[in-house]
Image (cartoon, rainbow, N blue to C red; front, side, top):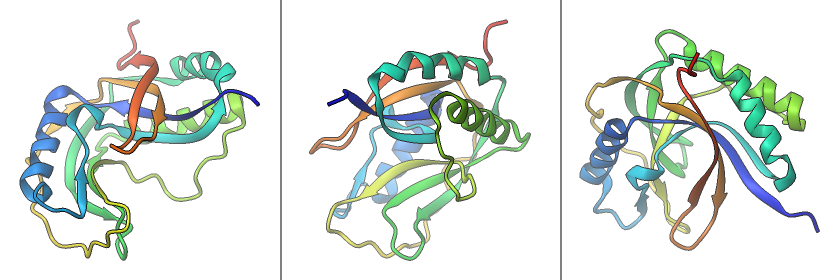
Length: 185
């Protein structure tokens, strides 16, 4: 049996933005038994979920990521967003991409992953967001209106290749490769 890892590529957020989003989630949904707050240190913006891949391809993926990561990537905090709207499984906060730099990075990452490991991009339109809470297994949440987090403009810090390990207390993320944004010249 081949050793595999559950992998994804994500944009890292500045510490202050992660702290602000985590505090917002705790304030507005932290007392609910049907939702599990994502800890500040685990907040990220997923660009591509690769699923289980051979561990042997990790170095190659890191190299491909370094070749497509450009910067700077100016972003903004948007409105709360329940996904999926009819029967949500996560509470997210939308991420604004005023210059289109995030969309360009997303396309470049998908192309690099396709060329490197035969990644098949998601057919759904890219909807940048940060998951701040997850619906607990077996719970059903009816979405409700929430106030928006504080408006904030920021620049993406880095893009990374992550390994996700699922456990009873939620997913644990391990950084396997990271490329600074903007990439040093």
